[in-house]
Amino acid sequence: MLLAVGSLNLPAESAVSRAVLSAGPSSSADIPPLGTQIGDPLKGHTSSVLALAVGKRSDGTPIVVSGSFDKTIRIWNLDTGKPIGKPLKGHRQEVYSLAISKRSDGTPVIISGGGEDSTVRIWNLDTGKPLGKPIVSERDIMWGVATEKLRDGTPVVAATAGGIRSVVGLWNLNTGKHIKRSFTEVFTTTTDLATGKRGDGTPVVVTANTEGRTRIWSLETGRPLTKSLFSCDQCQARALAVGKRRDGTPVAISANTDFPLPDEDTPDGKIWTYNLNTGKPIGKSIRIPATQFADLAVGRRGDGSPAIVYGDVSGNVSVWDLDTGAAAGEPFAAHSGTIYAVSAGKRSDGTPVVITGGSDKTIRIWSLGP
Image (cartoon, rainbow, N blue to C red):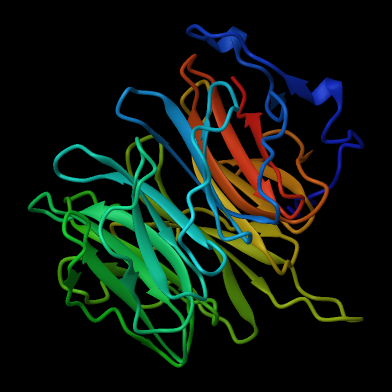
């Protein structure tokens, strides 16, 4: 079934689609319907919002961190929508990617990838201050960052940098020191990555690149654990995420589309779900229109069901059940232009939310529904 990503003919600022929730625990009956906007747009960036991450400060405050083409990182209170502190400055170019983690001493941190300045920076999430010196990549553009723990408990940063010979670098999050691994894809650019663990506890990184290839690697050895999960001649892996099904099976989700061509019919793309333990596809693919930009995340709805949340150049958001691939309602209008970043989390009152950022310079929060 082709699920068209279309508008519901409601403006993103409509009073019908906007709600402000009171504090306090929410039951399923209190959670607004899927696609209800929560609060007003978060404004402050002076250019497109390219990256988002959700986490918590040491005091338990749920937060959203955003990165922009304006070279800054901003921290927002997920409950109130208000900015926390001043913008974080240090990157010399656009901030393409973000992750949130903790050091071994419990310090919550932000990890940011600085695009064409080829650096990864680590910031104290509580204070906004930089921790250590920037990590400098040996390659050109820093496309993506992610974090995970090795079997011995060491927290690490994985980052991918582009070039003809694309590499994934690995660093100790506590010390910033480089950990030697290979992770090499030749004659292609790895544009996205995500981290997770297999059912046996093996920490892995999943990569996606410009030839549509998706691959699973061991973070311990740097060796591929699977062949390419997907490949094509004229397409690109546009978005990537790792999550879990209802039964606990860890999965990787990859959105692949052909390059849109002017004045020609471009074939639709597909979202594939892969078993992270085996590398095998699960269920049927989800068809999506070809697009130049996209992002996706895995979240959980109010009833606990896992969901794939997808936003692209249309400015609309689509949601599917992760287990069945069935559409969860109709796509809803989220931004007036391209959606570059999607993340999912939960507010203090228990409301599951999806956060989106895009070319209209705003960040918006939406209910994932009961």
